[in-house]
Length: 184
Image: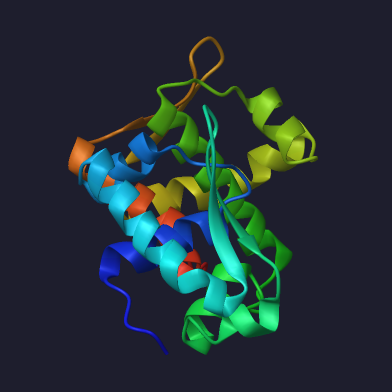
């Protein structure tokens, strides 16, 4: 296994876990570093990644994307437990994965300063608004672990209330560490 610094591992986890691209500014905000540091880390990763049949591609105006050409070879880069957790191959229930995805979508909207409404969120997850409401208590408990409150308002959509550093910590955990949320 190659030696990666913590930021590089977090960048890999973020890009591996996310279905969306992330700009250097978003990654910098999450890691609490400058955009230049993120660019340098990605540059260093791109020196190493071809050996593992992967690369991070920058799409101008859209963000970074991790492209894996050969999964088996890429697995050699990250410890097995990290890779399995990152790719969602943990064998956990569909409900847990859905709760995690709901949390991620709400956090990403918070990160972008955007609002998401229940119908819009349900539609993006391909579930009904009624089904979404059934998962909200678990979503709220996930946020409560970080001393955050999920507020749902018909006119204002979902918002997260709490200290900024708690929100950042929650974003970091859910976007970088898939196995963080565990329902009882």
